[in-house]
Amino acid sequence: MKRFIHISLLLLLPGCLLCLSSCENEDQRRIPEASVYMELNLAASYPTFRNSVNDTLVFTRPRNGHPTDRVGYGGILVYTFVNGTDLNYCAFDLCCPNEVNPNIRVNPNDRGEAVCKSCGTVYQLLTGTGMVISGPSKWNLKRYKVQLSGDMLYISR
Image 1: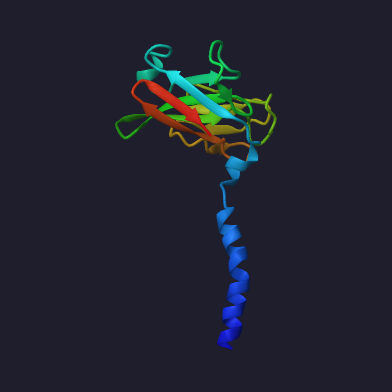
Image 2: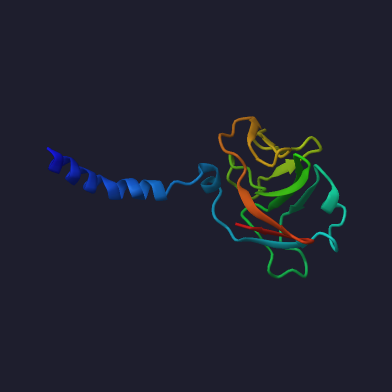
């Protein structure tokens, strides 16, 4: 009996490992993969963004003079929020994950939310999560990596 259990486990193990290794947040897979990379010089190009809370930058295409810019599937929304006493930055794809169309984008408002005009879903920006607050979407906004180094803010996939 022990031998049967050992053999069964050996046969099942590769499938379990494959399942565990392929686990990924469904929110991140909902929007098709697209190149994402931006370097934002906060001191030179966005000085007010550097120290303001509940502020947004929206990029729907690469900036003029920045050939390395890659703005994801529907564009990039960069947002500033406070976590404790620290100012933090987050970035999301502008594409509404309920619609999955690069031309249907969420729009930030002054209440720390992003709203899809097409389906009406409201997403949370205030805490940097991009989570659904209300509406038909079952998926949160696709989030990108953000790294601050000095005055440079790097956004990548």
